[in-house]
Image (tube, rainbow, N blue to C red; front, side, top):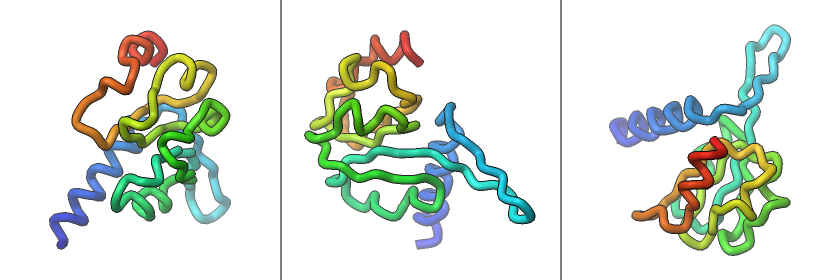
Length: 116
């Protein structure tokens, strides 16, 4: 169990380091808090509760995620039901897409490379 928690914590730290546009709010006499928004497919198992200590997480059905939902999001956590292309991503602040799938055919990698 300890190994699993350590591995989970390491993955969260790597995830947070890769997100470019996260915002930091300085709290007087307390330190700082990272404020970022993650939009996630609500049907990904075991995801709920993982990122809440680090970010605002909005859970939406993967088929229902649309441009309006992610305009101010920093990251997406999706499955194949969410097609990440110019129509979805253009004009958003999304800087990272994580997929809980084997492949990436639902992500327009060409668009992502030119709009990193």
